Image 1 (cartoon, rainbow, N blue to C red):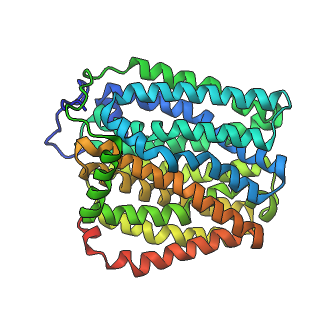
Image 2: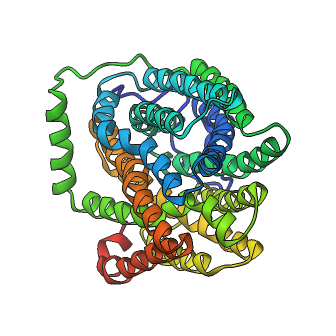
Length: 420
């Protein structure tokens, strides 16, 4: 990994930090290019995510199979993400991300063609989701570990928060555009427009300029590198504590997004437009949370804020599981999106600020293993099974209740969290 900061990384200022949440974009050219391309592409990704959930429901009419499609798409991340982290620590991360984004363009194009031509089946949907998961197992840890090379360590928390703001801006715009596209052009064109959106991120990646990559001089076998990661996580108490919290909140808290199409249709009795509105509410709240963090990160006690989000997020999910009005559910999701992003962005930023540079890709592979892989394969599968038996609202409510018990009985006793 290059030891020098990128040319665009300015030295830290001694004056009080500005409250402008976009100051990292102003100071760092490489991150500005990266953020712009990623955000535009993510709009297409959220259109595709919405369309896949709705398409799975149309093809199968089963809440269980909606969860299964999400689980299969994340299964490769469970299988290969640790190896992806080893690759990220030993190879040029910018090149790895560029190759992976090109392959995801191919996947989106195939989704469009199969749906547009009328040949899409549940089997094809599962196969293409599995392919995208294989690519993401390498792309996610590489992309996460790339951020510090774009901005430097001093502004890492702000950059991660701002990166989350782009993700949530896309979550607002993507489903709203997707609902219009579905009603006017059909599901297939959500995939087609997503394929076109990958051109923006690929163009941005080609414009980024970083110091020449220097591979590690003493590379061990991949399995040895993975063993080193587990030893580091086990023997570093703060990292172990943060990772345990990420596991609980990902497995029990994230699957409410997977079950959203079922809640929209069967609990709130709305159509694709209402489903898009609910996802947009989550995104709007998440955007507000990310911008709040980007502006306030240098001024707040991150550990205390992490605890506050850990308490309030499950309470909001419990309230959402009880909502029977589309507008009430949307209002609750605004705040749930805020607390979800504050919790996840703080966890990510704290982990990256602690880990040594030579292990960052591997730690981010463990993070993606949990947040993307375990939450979907285990969390969504379990939530889909419970939803099939007793309803999607009960599945969300039970998960939220267990999260709240964990926060009150475990996190509240960990004084070292408040010291972060």
